[in-house]
Image 1 (cartoon, rainbow, N blue to C red):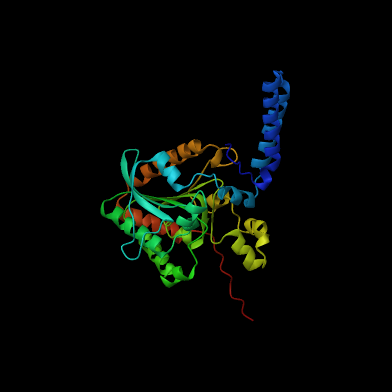
Image 2 (cartoon, rainbow, N blue to C red):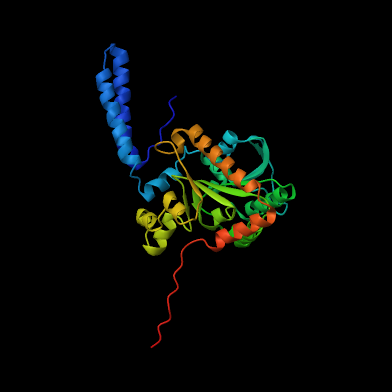
Length: 326
């Protein structure tokens, strides 16, 4: 049975051309006709359409790619770039949060600690993973693993992919904001190298709860923002349908984040998104991680903490308005 193809709205013209190409191939086989010239013409149109679509993506279109259900998730990348991943469960206080996974692994022969937000592929798994939205116990599990990494001097690699921390009543009752705040403080003082990678969505404090690291990397079709476009639209435009406008206003482009110093490197993706060639995206990630780990590995703990402090202390641009006296 043929698997369903997920097509984003702006990709539909490309999908129609692909169907036309498939029909030509099928006709050539069934009727033993030489349709090579027609095939080349359609292939040329497909290449042109790809260049036009993917070279001029709007921020909202990049958000849609970041949410693509076929896009590689955190554990997909862990499987591609690491060996012997051993998942560790529970926060030792309440329960195990399956939206946030973590454990030890080997990266290029070096032991590391992995902490990752994980979404599901289907309805059943999404319910299990709470749609990638961690609850307080998820962040407390992450804190436990961070402390374990520090104890055993393991570099930490975190994978960010969440629309935000879970905002339900039970999450608030167990103090999700406090759990995230503690992580911000403790990650700022962590005495081992740390790198965060935004592989899909990076929404609000839910992302930042595992994102205060020495280096932050982001895939070019991912986003990292204080709020989702829909949330911003609901507040400023009073209508979630204004999400495309909100995405523009929030400047949800990885290149903009790099220019502002929010992220340290933008990782290239295959044409159309990482879902079109996960192995290529994984290779780009592995190369970048090794490069940044090499830079950080030689720094003594005190230097790591001081450099991390300076990074976040000077993040962003500010303008102070003068007081006008009458």
